[in-house]
Length: 598
Image (cartoon, rainbow, N blue to C red; front, top):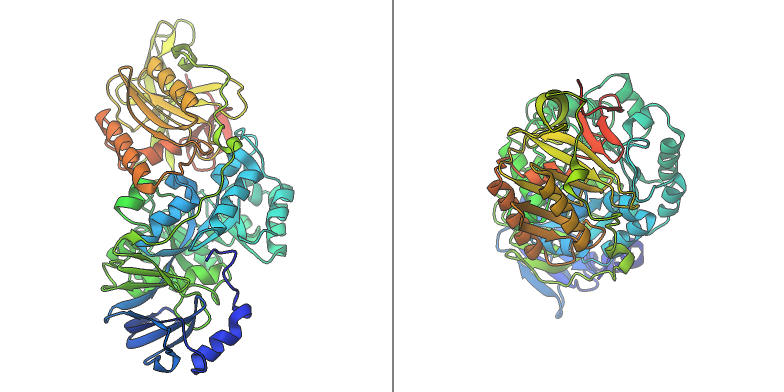
């Protein structure tokens, strides 16, 4: 049963009432379990759950009065009955999977609801791309709610995207059946400065009675932050410290704290609950960005909940942050997020609340996964050729395209360099003295070259700069058409000719990630849909992703989940220093700066 065909409560209210009263039999009864009630933060043993038409009709010590000759019985066998987990903010494209394959990957981990912002594909294919993601999401056996992207480009004037999102696009999308709100409002300076388009998008969302997502990636918690909150965003996931979480909650926002493949922002913020004692209702767990390797090998929201518990959070509070808190925030408390009458029957059976092994997953009243295996089909959208032919480069590149010219007569220069920060989204604005040979600035052992290759409009633009932190050695290059958020092509390398080889390989492949060393292709992940996603199973994409990350290690990189760091180097809305197709961007001031400082 798809999201689009799943019955609303009003359509089956009489069936639920009659089942609860014992006048008509339940379709399914889960019997003999421990009811985890996230409304009251209680654990109640020896309870049953009666389900009719995919929704919960009754929860109590004995559902025998709901039982009929055809009722399916699921034996809980004394296990905990936990609401299906909700991811409050995430991007399916970051998994390098389509919505169907992402759903197939996360169901065995207990995720039954996701709130997704497809702004990655919006930058490549515009409103049509968002509609494709939305439509495939509605086809799935779990709940995938779509937020209409707000910022393409993320920072107008700082980058060029394949398409732009307008306030009119937002107003149109608010009428689609699966749209739950507005995606993260990344143009935080625009909101703080009352930019008419940003406020028009927020107004269209609020007129539709839907939720506005936030993205305030600045340490400034003074008047600029107050202006941003006044502008309408209702949540934020860009906090990195306790003060960030506290200020967001004090100002009436939900603080979304994330654990993704590379973002470890829970431990430093959950102390607002565990040590300061703030009300946990205003804190939500999310992933933001998880690649397929993390999903297959480590988990999804179950991993996040376990991590929060390991950071000192009470297991029941951690579960609230991944269920009822999320549902309430998006106005869906009467539909998902708890095991109570009228709600969708999204339920996990687990033998331990702290380690949270996901043993059985029930979504909309039927078993969809058991013991790590997905048991249901996840239908695919018929992605058109236009979505598979998106690497539009004017020509093959040569090593000369990746040259940084030095001032005449210089033997060395001081360069502005992007500094990667392990396990965090922000970068540092650094300076290094770099040598000059034959009039060209050279990379060093600590500093690699980085280039942004335009790939939407075949302009032939290549912007060159430098980056530190990856630790690459030898003669190598890595290229990716996943380049948040404009999704041009990022190339990082120690050798200009290898950079050209990697870029040209992706041009021919139609998008993805590749690593070359000494003229040999070490690993590639093909991402033919918008240059962002594969419609292959998650296990296959994860295997190729692991080969890619091993190739990065073989080239000297020791960073945790360094690929995620690579893919964010063009994200011009997170400080401090980024690269775009228009130049090197100092995000602290939203100004372009020269690569060569002196």
